[in-house]
Image (cartoon, rainbow, N blue to C red):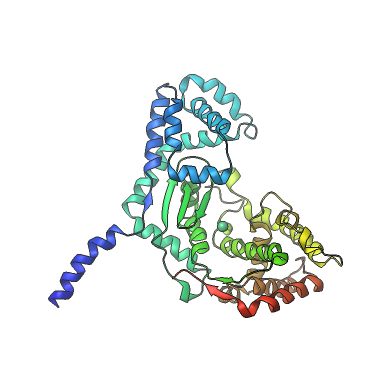
Length: 362
Ligand SMILES: [Zn+2]
C-alpha cells in the first residue's frame, strides 16, 4: 500500500505537468500593445513584426497566404482603431464594414477587451473542466470506443482575426472566435475541432484518377459530421454571436441543395472525364472544405432519425452518401442523388473497401 501511495505522489505532479493546456501568452502581449496605443503611442513596425514572428501566428498567417503589405496595413488599422487621436477616421471607416473589414474586426477586439481578459483568466483557472466540456461535445458524434482524449494537442490562442485552425498536433484558436463561441455555447468550438482529431477514418491508397472524388467524399463527411456538433448553435437567433458569426446553418442549408446538384450533375454525366475534375468545380462556392454540402446532408440524416447510424459509421465516406440518400428520399424537398452517381460511389467502394483500414488516434 505504501508503495502505491508513493507512486501516486510521484505521478501526480508529472501528470499535471503534461495536462492539456491553453497557451494564451500572445493575447496578453497583445493587450500590452493595445494599452500603449490607447495612450496614443504609435505601434512601432519592429515591435509589430517581432510580435508576428511567434510560431502560432506564423503558421496561421501562412495558411491565410498573406504578404508583407497585408501585415503593414493591419498594423495601420491597429493604430486607427486604438489611438484616440484617430477616432474620427475610425468612425468613418466603421460606416463601411465590408470595405474596412479588418478595421471592423480589430474594433470588435477593442470593444470586448475586458470581457476577453476575463474569459482568458477563467479558462486558465480551470482548463481541465474546459477541455472536458469540449470533449463531451466531440463525443456526441463519436462511437463510444473513440471517446478518448488528445492531451498531446497543444492549443494556442492568438489575438488576430476570427476563426480556428487545426494542424497536426496543434490547434490555433483566434481569441475572437473562441471568446464569442464559448460565450454563446461553451465548448462547441473545441468540440468541433477535437472531433476532427478523434474521428476514426477509413484510409486507403487512392489511384490518381479517383483522388478528387475520394477527397470530396472525405471532406463532406469530415465537416458534415463535425458541423452537427456546433452549427445548430450558430443560427440567426444566436444573438450572443456577432452578426457575421451567425446564420451559418441557415446559409449552408439554403446553398446545400444547389451545391449537391452541381456535384451530382458532374459525377453522373455520361461523358465524365475524371482527370478534368477539381474540388473547386465540384464544390463551386466560397468554401470548399466540405461544410456546405456536408452540413446539408448531415442535417437531413439527423432529421430523418439516422444520426445514431451515422455515428456508428462515422469513419466511412461511402456509407455517409448511402445514408444521406436514404434520408433524402424520405424528406420533402431534399435533393436526391441520381442512380448514376450512387453507382459511381458503389464502384469506388468496391474498388477500395478491401484494402481500407480504420485509422484513429491511439
Ligand atoms: Zn471543421
